Image (cartoon, rainbow, N blue to C red):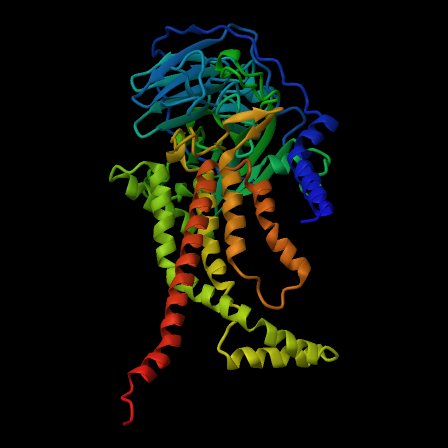
Length: 600
């Protein structure tokens, strides 16, 4: 490699690594909004609210845009009261400010895993963390929000929040926590006066996607939804609105999607708050919101918290309507909330029970999703026999390699045969250099006569590509790998950083992966007819993959490294086998001649 090529590769590598930091310097993020003040007094109320009436729903009219300021939220000035309810899996904290779920603490999942140490090891993953509004807060302007202060009380099965507005509209919410990370929510809008009450469009904020911990910069946070037989999602890329994904553009703050929604979920990489409405909403509104700074006690020693945490606040929107007196036209809405880990098998079972394909939260749909599901189920199946997850990945890689072994062997032999025929093919091309079309035709005829296929070398890669994308998709949200260690990698779901050099992480696995790729490329002869520039690109392809995968999860680079080592082993074994076969074939005539009886 000449000095010029080395310099170009080095500059390109530094630009790719430092691009996002450079953009942050040129276009700094907005400062985080200050935390809302409030006390943590726990309410000691009793269930004194009257029973909620049964009601019917009016046909949904055409949706209209909310009035200016209708979706803004101002925290009440009154003292905040909190009520907590615990199950075996989750500790729920409800607030009088908005009458909703302020915080959910997942008791079985530590906030920081691996070699990260925090001041208090008992700190666990929380959802809706420091969100501007509580989950199930109702937005829609003063006519339906009032001062935003609810009365909280523990009920027989959970928590009850109630508010009576000056207009005579009573809002009652019943929260009933259950098992399997589920909670049932019932909401009533009642008319307590003798005249009709016009209720504006209501937005029910069911959750805010928030970071897992102070080190989470939110690249995998999003809001997903399912309706009309398909799922979709919105991520930070939509709100950044960058040109070509790199150059800053006009940032967006809100997204509205119209449709019939079976569910929607605000999620980060491994956890989610999903809402399943019994009465399908007709609009989903998602906003990017700034969050307060992280608690210093949550930041591991030696690490720096992400300075500008943000979240995605999402709400179901229901149309404006009129509620008549007498209880004949009260509004009753029901929701099922899932507040827990993104575990595929659990979500799949719940999706079957509710008939809404809740497992699509994992993004395992489509062609590549089929492979992702198969690989995840295979990995969990091997783990059920007591095999650590890292060794499950290695075992699956070996199994896949064995399945594709015959195909790869055919490819290796074909490429070797084509390399041997390269001088003859080069002679044909030189002979017909004035007529490239005829030269190509003669070359193809020559290859057919010698029974070689130029596509044989690419076929194994094409066949294994869906498996690799399936692995990539699966590892993006594989809850099972969180906190799983292997050698120096303390968390297979994250990069395997062992140290920092001038602030840059040192990740050994991607480097080892690149070394195995160079080794594999050295053993593989170049395809015939490939021009020098293409050969250079293929030669330095490992460097490009290091740049692309350097900050990916250790599990993905582990898979690819093992795959490369197995390919190297197969290439060597194939060459040894072919050499022995050739020696045997070439020696057979001489041996037969020697064994003939001599004439007297």
